[in-house]
Length: 137
Image (cartoon, rainbow, N blue to C red; front, side, top):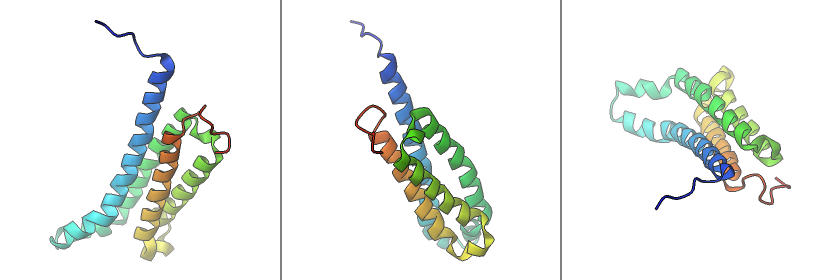
């Protein structure tokens, strides 16, 4: 028995869900870098310098931002004020931690906070696809 192809809308929703889940995964990568790598590298003094490298956070922002923005634009998430607000606040924290040298002492806290906020925005976007009582969001 062959099954009928999925309706176009369902395929589009699955594609959008993959984008949001990818963005959440990148935020998770950011969190793993900030929380797990320092503990792992503490056992390896020579490798410990990699966790303090400012360039790592800058590269992660440059990877995460386009994926997140693309996921939100493709899913219609940019039409949901709460999702957009969370994403902008999250990116503000990430950018501040990665690029504002005066805040370098707080880089890890800013990065973790930004990654969690962005992951929250994508989670809301993923859980509330357009058309399902999302007028208030």
